[in-house]
Length: 129
Image (cartoon, rainbow, N blue to C red):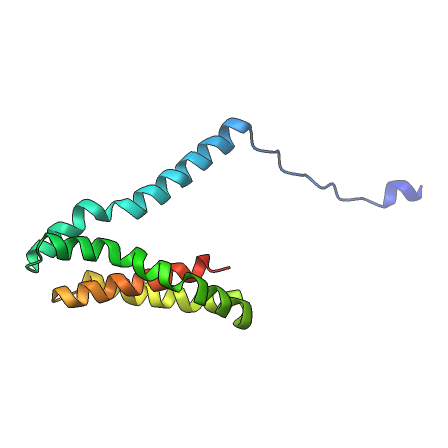
């Protein structure tokens, strides 16, 4: 018969993840974000001391990221509304990568502060909605 000749492909839907699995994934992501954001706190002062930084300058280096990010949050939000979010995010990733490069290979304290400032400017572009 006609019904036997026509083969309908079966669609297999993936099983939904269990609550415990989703909770584990959320915990791992949260830990990764927290670890990535705060692992620099004990390491950065050691690096800055090698460049001859005092306590105030180490504090400035640690806080420069958030100072620049806070100052640019609203302007970058307006820019993302006008130019499109994708453009601003891609530009921000490039700026963040440049800042990371400068901070990692900073020959002087000024370059380290500049690198951390660029990191803040690049990071806030992804959050500017």
